Image 1 (tube, rainbow, N blue to C red):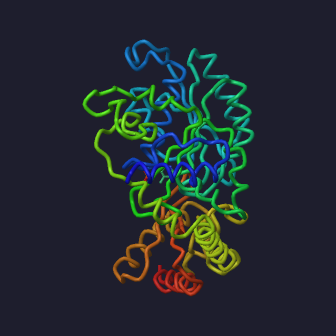
Image 2: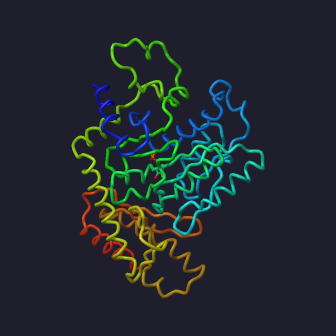
Image 3: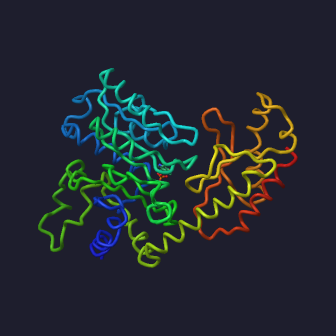
Length: 375
Ligand SMILES: *Cc1c(COP(=O)(O)O)cnc(C)c1O
């Protein structure tokens, strides 16, 4: 059964969506985006220094990885777990909309080399967690090629936009990456957990991770072992998480997922259009969001008339947490919030459930105002 599942996945699945990619492993594992990102870093290191597998980090020069200051925390976590260290993850500046600035990436790669570090890994983000920003992948690919660095795309959140003919241009350049993380368990509503790591170089995953346990991975099995992903993973026993995606894909088709994704983006655009000029709202960044992340402040009347300054910032910082707490007490809705850089707490409305409706969005706005107007 599982061989058939995997074979079908290979044939009809990701390869046709992501031109030029081979699905090497991780769709089938019980993982998440954080672990997929760590696998990518592991592969990049192995590609440059295969001896690390036997001899460990002591045999290597000091490495440097690069990712934007808005990237997911799992990049640093992976570096810590792999013995590379969080100090070796160099943060690249982002523009006003949260996209990595390619010239700053290049400057930092050159600077790291001058300091005697070896740049080995760049993780661009396709759909940042907070702003939903897509890093400029084409420019980043050029820099990676020029400096001989592995290009990874963390598309845990935004990778699913590849399913949409209307929105996939946002990932232009992804076809040049060495690896990509994609989480069907986020935007595509596959039940947790289901994360895929797509790797360009066939066989690398195997070389990097295999231990050839003779009691499991016999070559003389009665079925085709080329789909046996077991020895590519770090884990031994695993869920067949790919099955959920396979089943949904068979049921909905790519057009089904596309409709689902387009709907979520349409809903978020509706929310953005409703609040961008509405009294009491301020957007965190200018322009239409690229993903479904709508980031905004709600300003209660008492704050609206205050002059810009420390006191206003201090008051505004407390608004989102109080409204969120009230939302939870009433049990009506929940919207996450966070500060980012020098920006005080703001709401981040993310839509990944295609069952949501325009009325739900209207309700959300009314509810925020109802719960926050006395603050
Ligand atoms: C959510 C997210 C991750 C982590 O994915 P998990 O499946 O929760 O481990 C990594 N990167 C980005 C950009 C994310 O949004």
